[in-house]
Length: 198
Image (cartoon, one colour):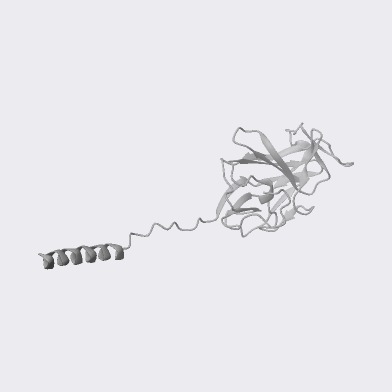
């Protein structure tokens, strides 16, 4: 009797060891891939005076041209989340080309309710105001930018859903914009020198 009990216990211990060695199928998730979302499609050059739509709530502090800029093109992304990614602007989906705009892009971050929470200007422009609020400039004052040159990560909420509206605006001479994409690179996160405290 004692021998059969020992044999039974030994068999149970062996079966437990055998179970412990079985490795379940991998549940590891592959790292997320970079994602590109088109902000604007290329719009050919047109004289400022021929651009009919104005952005009446925007004022450019300029001595040349019109203080109320005209709309070259505008579009808005679907709902997105940053979730630790770095966000930059490019001229193509693969982020191998730069982009150009005459005069500038007005980037507006919309929260889940559609309310504008932050704004920034990118391009060749003097001071830009929406109402009494001066809009921050991102990047250098220029018409053309290299791929990945303009980092918009600090403009976007870290974990809340958002939409990004891009409006190409012109106030002097001719207005145009090339393709502009928002590139989200997972896992690179915010820069150490981000002063917003997020």
